[in-house]
Length: 141
Image 1 (cartoon, rainbow, N blue to C red):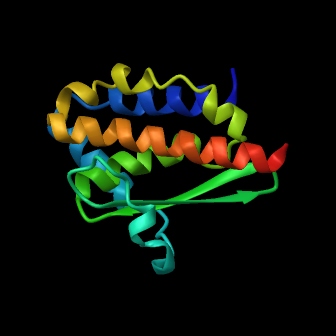
Image 2 (image 1 turned 90 degrees about the vertical axis):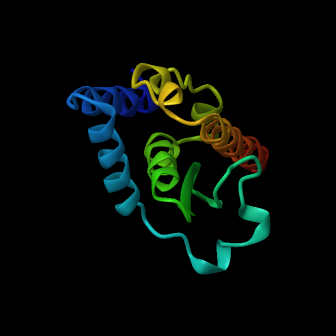
């Protein structure tokens, strides 16, 4: 099992410990609070995710051959969502990110418990993380 799949399985297990979605939302809020802060210089218009109801900033750096993401959001639930995604995709090789299956999102029931605009935002966040992987992959080749 690759590292991304292992992290996704950990997340699925963690979410299965909670009986209802209020507890899962509280857990996501806690994850958001533990998200490493993005450097204020990266909270720019060009780092905002388009398609999100709230503001979400994502920045990526290449460290060796791995992408390291930082992010922030002005909404607590959204910050928790991006924290989950960064946990999965940060410190990974661009090829691993591009080849990653994101079915863990369905396994934890996240999409079905989000408003349509937040669900669209989730898709936009994943798309942006993968776009960074494409961009940095070309630098590695």
